[in-house]
Amino acid sequence: MTTQPEAQTAQTRESGAVSVAAGHAADLDALREWDATVDGMARTGELVAVSSLDDASIEGRTHEYLAQYFAGIPVFGSGVSRQLDGSGVTVSLFGTLHPNIDVDTAPALSGAEVAALLEELHGGEILAGGAPSLGILPLADGSYALAYLVVMSDGYFYFADADDGRIRHRLNAVKEQSAVGAGESSRGNRQKLSTTQAEGHFQAHDRMRPAELVTLDLRFNFLRYTRLLIDHLIDDLPTGEAIWTANDYATDADNDWDDPTVVDTHSYTGWTYDYFSARHGWEGIDGENGRTISMVNMAVANAFFAPPPFGPEGTGVFGYGRFTDETSEEPLTTLDVVGHELMHGVTHFSVSNRTGFEFGLVTDFPASARLGPESFTTRAGTTYSCETARFPGLVLTPDGLDVGLVPAWCVDGRFLLASSQGGAIHEGYSDIFGESLGFFYENEGVSADYIQGGDFKEDRAARSMVDPKSLRNGFYPDVYRDRYEFALTLDETFGPDYSGFVFVDGRYFGSLGPNGEGFGYGGSHWNSLILSHAFYLAIEGGTHRTSGMTVEGIGGDNRAEIEAIFFRAMRDLMPAASSLPIAAAVLRQSAADLDAGGAAHRAVDQALRAVGL
Image 1 (cartoon, rainbow, N blue to C red):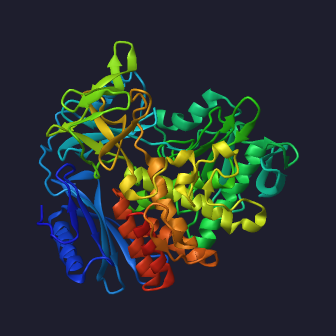
Image 2: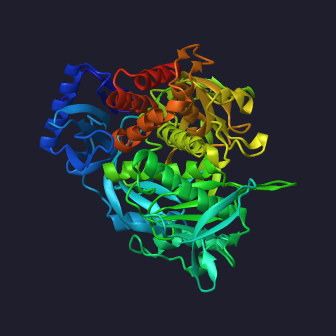
Image 3: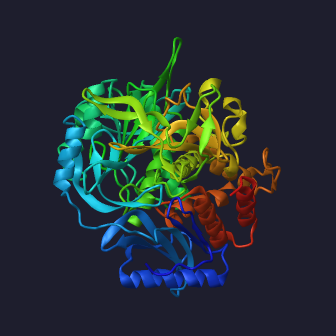
């Protein structure tokens, strides 16, 4: 691989990844040095241009994405986002590269053979999403594997070793959480709905906006839910071919809708479309005015976005359930929740369209993995030494999948620690724009409070961007140093996973479950507050609780400037594999591009410094 410049390069021995952050915050020599490196890699075929898009905010600027290849094979999630001015001079470079790949690129197994092995491993579960794609998979210990990327109907993207078919990594695809009618929302507000009249009733199908918005009613039927979510994949249908029918619509007889869940979802999806179009020039969830499909009345207490190739047309889908307890039910369809899920879609499509990586913003690749201690002692008094530690995890038994004990992932006798920093960016952005909707529509009677789920019962509010530590007994971190990380496991069948043992600043903090039974969570929602709190501070200002730094916010009347900086950072600049520090560098670049030396630029920089980024 082409020699890497020393300046603006962050590489850890554990991950093997090089983080590229060269732009406004770098000196000109470092930027030019990296630019020459990228040009050299492009000439040798190590970087391949995937896209070149005009900047929607700054005339004359373009953004190109170059994906990394090794011996003609793509490196999953790796590449560089390059910004160019009108004369073709590079303004900024952000991304993740792998300079020391050493792997045999001749697969011992074909994609079809790997698919058959995975189906056998899952007890005959049907494989979905087309032919497996071959690539180089970076691993958390700095090594690499030739692997096939396979989408399966259980909602995971699997990376299976091309030599023996074992699972090297897996990613959860699901991000959890023409007539005019009217109806009462779950909060008692009267709202308009754009609907379609057909066959003697009205359907929740908005044909008035450039992007069609469709709301399907699952009627708490689990079989209907699974059919609409995965049957398109199972049948391997062409993208866009519908498996839903008129019987799946949310409908009403007189266009005066009496299901507040449908009213909320259908109307707020339209509001969100209008916000992204008016504020950011982004048309539809996919940026191309593609049809947006939502499913309501799911029999689960959850809301989610599932990306392509899931959904009733293989183009992604949004789902909304409800909280239930002994006394009440609360649909998960408030404006900030709907906006949160729809922003997951915008994040996915803005990154996947630009980078060509079908997963979009990578949530779990371990570019930020680092070495932890050799041993630790839990609060219950149990001591784990890395070389002998076995943690709860998924194992394969004669009866199928079960929870058993799997070995810890050790490097040089030390635990390997990581968290889902890409997932934290995903969740932080969804909170940011879910709450921004409230302020955009403040005169429509909705809440504007910077609290995700603020309209729910007090104990159900999820996260506070104002003061992350004000909820859940101060559990959420508000500075990067205090982010939550997890000791990794490495099972011979299912590959790496997050254990249930949590670390802060490299030291043991606690366990998910008495003995670490709560494995598999990378802390994306917890760590998201680091980024979303910075967004709040950039607007409202204040003194940071933990760092003590004071931020001179731009003020609520100017919030659109901060929203524009954050949105452009994701739409145009964010590389597929990003950590929170890379996201901070991208945000500073976006601020400098839009408001060099101005109040918004200063506010973003101060806010990021206050949260330790």
